[in-house]
Image 1 (cartoon, rainbow, N blue to C red):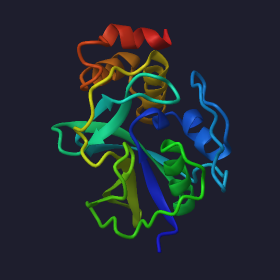
Image 2 (cartoon, rainbow, N blue to C red):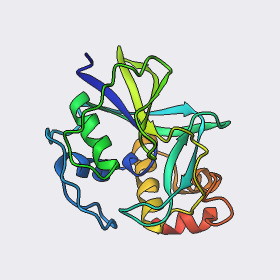
Image 3 (cartoon, rainbow, N blue to C red):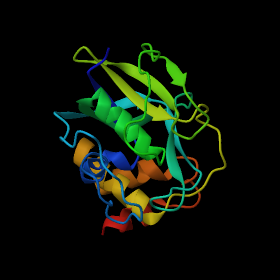
Image 4 (cartoon, rainbow, N blue to C red):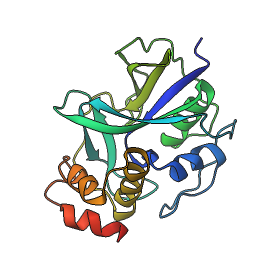
Length: 203
């Protein structure tokens, strides 16, 4: 039974302050929904920047920010700038529950998620677990939709993108211009959000 793991974030949870809301409880800056927090509110033991193969798409409507939500598309060409947090398996499940608008304490069996595999336990946007490899002998997991290309594209809200910009700067140390060009290319943002407009969000 997995006790600790790396949760790999690629959306607004790239920003540590936003991610901590899922652990401590509260409302993220710019968001409209309160989160109950995890059963164990301790912060991540460590975090690390990494690149994973694939892409992201902005789809659906976020209940926290409005606008589209980022989902991971493992089959897309390219790379996704991500941030891995070392947390407990219980915390991971509690974060997952809150992403699904449920209370902490959700029962999810992580064992079926074999190395470089996927396991869907429902049809929702974040009800598919993906195994992205091993770091320091611990699994790296994230969640997305069963089909990363499912759902109508929808541009993300300004505060959603701003939170991603801040998180990418924190974790990868990229300049704002580079971050803006990175985000502006993904489906849902492309053609709606220009790189200069994204860069201006944190000006």
